[in-house]
Image 1 (cartoon, rainbow, N blue to C red):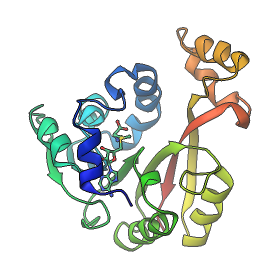
Image 2 (cartoon, rainbow, N blue to C red; image 1 turned 90 degrees about the vertical axis):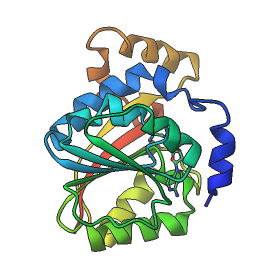
Image 3 (cartoon, protein in one colour; image 1 turned 45 degrees about the horizontal axis):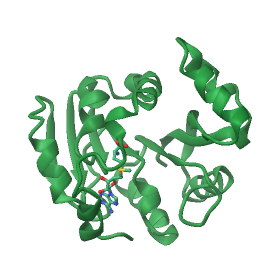
Image 4 (cartoon, helix red, strand yellow; image 1 turned 180 degrees about the vertical axis):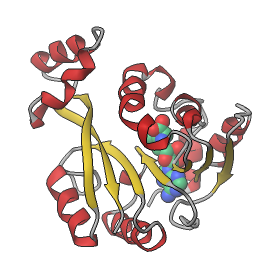
Length: 210
Ligand SMILES: C[S@@+](CC[C@H](N)C(=O)[O-])C[C@H]1O[C@@H](n2cnc3c(N)ncnc32)[C@H](O)[C@@H]1O
């Protein structure tokens, strides 16, 4: 696993992943996430500087948002969001009990494969019967996800896949870049779930814990 120091180094410059400019991702996430979190209590893991806490999870009744980087959490706190509390913590160390929904958007793939397994087991133990929203790049490397591996692991721990949606496509080759630009047209994002697997970069899973 990467450490707090590693992530603090990323956050030496604000918004290291450019998430505040990822308006397309926000629009697609909002479309698929809002119905699951409206008026619910949410635990947001790997919240970073609180971009999604503000842009997506403002529809939740309450948000407990955690990140391993205290630099990022200090910036998130300065947003002064009315429904959110922020805490510096390693997501594997905090209690998952008592929330309606757990959201782990683009953070779990920083864990080792073994830690990802421990994470799913912890969700199953402490968040039984409730919803987990999980997203990340679908790349078939050990550290990242592959759809096939995720499906096997969800099944092994007893999760039910309620639905999944594509969030973004690769930027290469040129043919996919053309598709990526078409998706940015009004309502173009509705085509995302119809695209072939090989074009997909990121995917969101809505899961029911066993
Ligand atoms: C790519 S950023 C995503 C931020 C935000 N979720 C988003 O999608 O805009 C990944 C975040 O996960 C956090 N993170 C990584 N490993 C973590 C861990 N073990 N515990 C808590 N946060 C972690 C990083 O500090 C970073 O803020």
